[in-house]
Image (cartoon, rainbow, N blue to C red; front, top):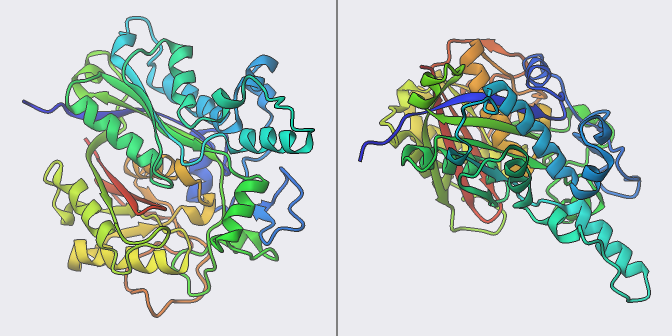
Amino acid sequence: MELKRVVVTGLGAITPLGKTVEETWTNLVNGVSGAAPITQFDASKFKTQFACEVKNYDPKEYFDRKEVRKLDLYAQYAMIAADQAIADAKLDAEGIDTNEVGVIWGAGIGGLKTFLDEVSGFAKGDGTPRLSPFFIPKMIADIAPGHISMKYGFRGPNFGTVSACASSTNAIGDAYNLIRLGKAKAFVTGGSEAAINEAGVGGFNAMQALSTRNDDPKTASRPFDKERDGFVMGEGGASIILEEYEHAVARGANIYCEIVGAGMTADAHHLTAPHPEGLGAKRVMENALKDNNIDPTEVDYINVHGTSTPLGDIAETKAIKEVFGEHAFKLNISSTKSMTGHLLGAAGAVESMACILAIKNGIVPPTINHFVDDPEIDNALNFTFDKAQERTVKVALSNTFGFGGHNASVVFKAL
């Protein structure tokens, strides 16, 4: 069986750096931090009092009152990003066979705010179960792709992926593989997350996973810096339209680049910590490159998982050196989480978008907030510290790793 080629024909985003792809990309390239004190709840008693929120968000700008009642914030972000990407790809044009268009969407947590509100309300009552009829369909992590498909009539494969912080990269990989196998002509894929609330921040604080640099939020996300003390939570979402190459060409679609690989592995090591030698990370990159026999020396840019955690940044660096050898020192590497924060299940979609735009625009966004070299990290590697770098990017790779030992990587290539 001959496998189909798959290309990117649309992008959409709502992130801590902007409510559109263009605004997000401009701020990424300019090294803007999205971190600020939390506004969505009173965080004054929490260990962490800041996050990367979507700024000045008003759901009434996008949805009517009835829709807001039915959509958790994570699903709102999903709909906004998907709407942008579908419009960009003109996937809602006449003549599109909607039976051949699917939706695969990633979310590591889903409707956490809905769950929090409903359970808190019940706990305050007299024990009588007065729960909203929208409780379950707002909360579940697979409801976002359902809403997208219902709005546009897309009747192809439709499901959600849940693999913690690897969720949206898994969604992209699944969409890529299904198109390669001829199971659909196009997919709306990506991911969204909205966990900046008492349960999300409190829960990650209890794990000691978040930075507590409350005196200086904008510099709190410090990937590969010796003084990093945890990740900064982000929210929002991004959507990518993947399409079978010949289908895209036949309808005259704008093509950003080709997706040429997707890898998935497990660390099988620890509940939350990565394998100390980065073995799962090493294998997942190797697997992604093997899909189309991409030689490691062809890769120009890696958007790393790089969460600003003490163990994770070291393990990923070791894995990169194992996979790429001497070529690792010729790569550009950057962690855009230093600006967006960690969007959990949506991280992979936002970071894949950064890879796609790096290919399109010939510029690599930076890793900001580098102050002190870590002796356990090889600083001869080019982490693109503090300032974007112009570079012809023909092949870019994006890594995401999640609690539970889930690893996922995708590879994009210029046409």
